[in-house]
Image (tube, rainbow, N blue to C red; front, top):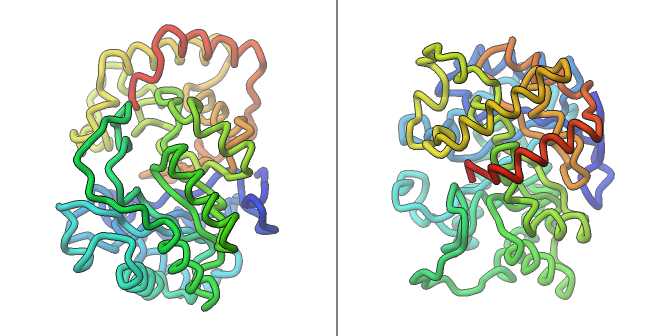
Length: 345
């Protein structure tokens, strides 16, 4: 395994992070425990979750992922061996079952954080992230920003003050953002810089061979401001394994189980995936190795979040940390990106 540190900290994290959103939906508690055991045994010390998991979010499975991690922590006693990250959900009219107000008010953050800690059976989180912004902006598959009727008032200072209170209590060690854009990143950094408030250490956004939009503005922000990307969906819901190019039916694949994530099903995504697979084969690699090694090599990426439904997938994903892509391979990847740019934002 390769390691780095969370930006502006001395916390060592593996360059691969275990994503857990399948725990409680596609994976049982026993499956989740086995994945965490295997990941830790193979050097992965960074686990990521969220209050809304498992995915897709449903009232029946709300908090199930955190509960499974919690029972593993209680059973193994290995809390101090892992870096644990979770998230508070932002506004969404479909998630009213989570709490009375889906916002980042002091009452909401306290309620969500305390519930997460209870389910996780821990006293603190190493990273606590805002899962998506309160304001209306482009995230979750919306390619560009569009002006919308938005009643949001800039409360970023207040949010940081609330998070600061929990840092001082010891419930949170570091804070992060998720599904955020350059303006939001800089606003948070500005408030922390001039008001002695907690500084954002990480941002968790989608980033893959099929979605490189992060490079358009956020990558420079992260490099210059020392904020680390935690890249999620690096395999584009399994599309970048190449398994959908064979014509075989995969009824239990995420993209089949959850058709709402249709952006990975587009003709452009399929064609780009085929071209990336050709590059992989030409260079003696699997498409999985090409896809994950590309993310892992980016200088603005702190850790790549991988998710798996089987131990075989997990092993293959973790093993990609050994792969290094040459300049010629990276050039070939960029040539595909030029022809079919970001088909699945």
